[in-house]
Amino acid sequence: MRVSLSLLPLFLLGTFAIPSSLLQRRNDTIPPFFLLAGDSTTATQSADGGGWGDGFINTTLFNGARGINYGHDGATTVSYRSGGYWATVLEKVQEYKSDYRTFVTIQFGDNDQKPAANITVPEYTGNLEQFVHDVRNAGGTPILVTPLSRRDYDNSTGTPTIILNLEDQRNATIVAAERTDAAWIDLNKASTDYLNAIGPADAYTYNLDADDYTHINVEGSQVFGGMVAALIDQIFPELKNDGYLEVYPNLLTALEEGEYYWP
Ligand SMILES: *[C@@H]1O[C@H](CO)[C@@H](O)[C@H](O)[C@H]1NC(C)=O
Ligand SMILES: *[C@@H]1O[C@H](CO)[C@@H](O)[C@H](O)[C@H]1NC(C)=O
Ligand SMILES: *[C@@H]1O[C@H](CO)[C@@H](O)[C@H](O)[C@H]1NC(C)=O
Ligand SMILES: *[C@@H]1O[C@H](CO)[C@@H](O)[C@H](O)[C@H]1NC(C)=O
Ligand SMILES: *[C@@H]1O[C@H](CO)[C@@H](O)[C@H](O)[C@H]1NC(C)=O
Image (cartoon, rainbow, N blue to C red):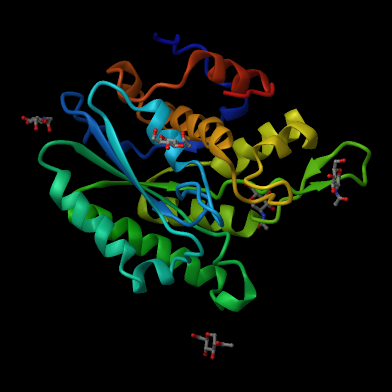
């Protein structure tokens, strides 16, 4: 089922940018392959982690489009490379690029910002820029993703409001995208706006465990995976038009209206 392009989600408006250079590279004839690079907020649901990646792969890809979740619990932009996970992603770009249009989503920040990681914001920014160059050299299309918001609310004003504790990393991700003329989506802003709209009680139903305000369960993965797909559809609309990347209409409407959704 197709959703009209005019139904752009309210909470997703203005949260993306596409450089003109990418428009020339579109190839509508072959399906996309999404390789998801990131930390536990992208990774498959497990005891200690769980992000949006599997929900994205399970529920938004159609018509021959595929994806693999390479999110790794605890990863920083440094450890993802030194641990060999990044090399695997680049190998997969090489492997799939003749049969698919390969995209690599790149989302870090949660662990990079921890003091123990000892990674400055300029270092984090430079590491993201290097990831962009590496993907292009391998023959893929990078998409930088600002980090999924945590579900930490400040109640001091009387209206629970998400605490912007990933803002440095959000802004740095956008800087890295602008410096490299790469596509980017503002998942941090879109998720923050949505969590503010639905409030803490509903937001906590997506917690991996009752007191885990960072990681998301299967249902949360499908909601925020759908949000990622909606954001990507806005910068690569041909993916939606060709039926490769689509968000369930009821979820898209909920994101548009800022209403709680349970798959
Ligand atoms: C699109 O992909 C097809 C199949 O790989 C290829 O034959 C064609 O040349 C590509 N077109 C462009 C514009 O890159
Ligand atoms: C994705 O699908 C697999 C296989 O059916 C399932 O085990 C997993 O729970 C699903 N995860 C999400 C987030 O949809
Ligand atoms: C943090 O990184 C800097 C620069 O790489 C290094 O000089 C310093 O020793 C590191 N600090 C710790 C506590 O690891
Ligand atoms: C804000 O309110 C929510 C829901 O009542 C609560 O779970 C949360 O702990 C509160 N946040 C703080 C920082 O006190
Ligand atoms: C992040 O960027 C926004 C503009 O998009 C700005 O308002 C905000 O002050 C920046 N925050 C930090 C911590 O630099």
